[in-house]
Amino acid sequence: MIRLTAPIAREELLKLHAGDRVSLSGVIYTARDAAHGRLCAALDRGEALPVNLCNQVIFYAGPTPAPEGKPVGAIGPTTSVRMDAYTPKLLRYGVSGLIGKGDRTPAVCDALQECGAVYFAAIGGCAAYMSACIQSCDVVAYDDLGTESIKRLVVKDLPLTVACDAHGGNAYRDGMNAYLETSRKD
Amino acid sequence: MHNLSLIHLRDVTRAVKELCIEACTHLPGQVCSLLEKARQEEPFPPARETLELICRNAKIAAETGIPICQDTGMAVVFAYLGQDVHLTGGLLEDAVNEGVRQGYTEGYLRKSVVGDPVRRGNTGDNTPAILHIRIVPGNQLRLVVSPKGFGSENMSRVAMLAPAQGLEGVKQFVLDAVKQAGSNPCPPMMLGVGIGGDFEQVATLAKEALVFSQPHPDPWYRALEKELLDSVNRLGIGPQGFGGQTTALSLHIRTAPTHIAGLPVAVNVGCHVTRHAERVLTGQPCTLAAKEGNR
Ligand code: SF4
Image (cartoon, rainbow over all chains, first blue to last red; front, top):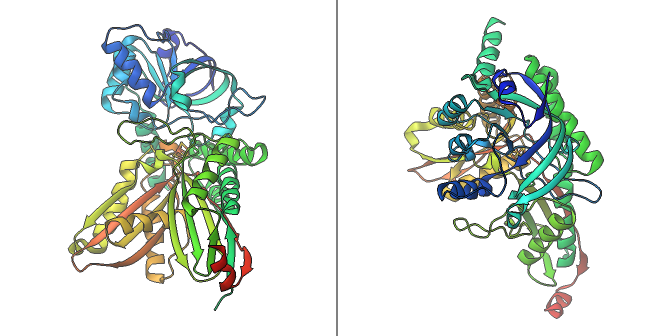
């Protein structure tokens, strides 16, 4: 288990390899479909983003409302591939880490290598468990989007897997092949 | 012949509200057992670890009341309305939507519905529900609420096969749908397969096959369910797509008669958070005269 603190230094990111288990603490930002649309539209217009996301980690997540006394309700990753149309642009802008679930398209994997960035997978559907990893949650942009607004999260020990690393490694491809190999031996 | 019964729609609203909250926080016992069994039988260590965390998460949700998954879905509601029931106090559809509104607001569930599919805009209360009304014998109203997340819904497929494609075509289509879904729908998946009917009926059959996860009454189709589930679990996708034996926890089929020219097939992909909660409302006995007078 590799312990990391976000924002994650670029040289730390380059040391990670597909399949590594990571425990992440520190500051990350949520953004999903609608926020991605707005962020990329702002970049296209040459405008500054409402939050500086350079060298930051984005978590594709839209939590449930916080019950009284809790920073957030249930929280977990949404399907990453829906962000793929936007991701290369955000990586070239300077985002350095992504957290979601599910494999990415080749264009995203190429952009990760080009930019020295990493895509982490969180377990989908473990949102009651992950809720306890969130220490604070504050809306910092696009409040009108409700659950899809950009939120600044302080997290502790968020369990992640390096899914696509900065060197072309892919834990979906490798994991499936490793399993199929062991099952053929049986 | 049943006695008539009178059901007030405020009771429908209350039931739907409570069922939304219950479904989002309590995974059905059947799904918990399937997960537990998969965890014990999974030979690939990383996959077993993932299944362990998934089982632990379901327990935490039930204990704390925090939803199992942050995607508390669109509320799919099945209303099995006995034909000897008289509903009073408004419209059934309004009562169901009011229940969804209250459940998602008071239960701190996520509002994930946009009012317009193209121009978007969150409705703010997770309404409207997807409501299926079925008239059945009897004088009770059975309500089933099944919140459906879209990570898995997006991976669902419908095809209008030609009769010549036959059984092999059906099998191939199901396997292709699962392969295309891959790591996206939070595997381990649960799968509902509809075969027959027409374009819209086949999708509903698949949805019911998924939500109710009951073996087909015909042994020939039960054998096909098992064969397809085994094939799916040989693909190696595994929990979360990182490899393993457990790609799907269950696969069930529902069938209906179809046209001489057609062989519709649908696969409704569900995730390991395939949830539903149900309740039967019995209402007050009433006579025909009281029913008339109530208008
Ligand atoms: S696919 Fe299921 S488990 Fe995954 S995020 Fe959606 S509702 Fe949750």
